[in-house]
Length: 401
Ligand code: CTP
Image (cartoon, rainbow, N blue to C red; front, side, top):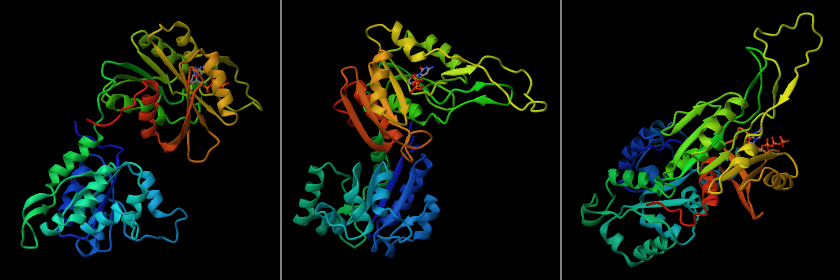
């Protein structure tokens, strides 16, 4: 099924009559769930208006290289946040600049700073398209991993007939969809993932909880599903997904659910923040504060789900733990790897700002059984979901179909 939920796409529009067709493409992308941001080159503003594009995308349209109010250069924050950059129509001018590292406007700067997939859909006069320098630039871009959606042949707006017409909007749309489809490299693998923070009830109103949002665990489950795995997610947060989701609240419920599904599993990934302790007693009625200056809630230890599963695992099963620490991150991670007998541990530093708990971003260190460390700098949790699986399964070629 075509689904671009959570995908952030930048569409760069350059000065060309075909730019009006991109409005329809944007509509299709948004209908499929994508978050679209548009960058206009100065010439593109002659062909399509910011009002049309911001109304279609429900986002600000970017044109200026510098916005004085922002501390972080716009071209860097835009490039960091997006999953894909599509330039359509891509003029000979913009193609030439990107192929030669020229950054003289916001779009060419974003393209140069962009570390993920860039797709260009050229459109221009047929003689311009045939120009040897334009062709050299196209080849250069292709050699460096840029994808080109070739222009079509037909009647051109300039009165000529030949190759240079922007590829059909549906062709560009299908190309984007295909770009996000992952190779089904984990097909046949059964992966069990836990996500979210457990809630340990005190009375009908209160519980002991933690700040975990479940985003990291859900991102791994999504990535595993995209890779074709047979995914089961045990989660404390609601998630409407195309794979099995088992909703739990407490550590004991998570424990029971993990135990139930574990024997059929190839890999267990415990991304959940499980409460180490739960209240001994559950008060059936709301605890009232009258006549109390102090309230003592006695706690009892919860089972260590990860450790217990590692103790009974078969040799073919892989166990992955997480550890969130505020100091001595690697030291504690190595200790937990050993003590819990894990195959991998994914460590993250919760003292960093806008990373880890409740954030859309994370930076992590993946440590394997032989203590090899793989440090992954700040990335979206979606990206990290794929990268964690690539480490666990030692996947080198992770390209698309
Ligand atoms: N974990 C678990 N069961 C628990 C506690 C933790 O399965 N009762 C799992 C977590 O899902 C995580 C790993 O163990 O994958 C490490 O959790 P963490 O909270 O970092 O460490 P703890 O073992 O609980 O130790 P401490 O809280 O003392 O750091």
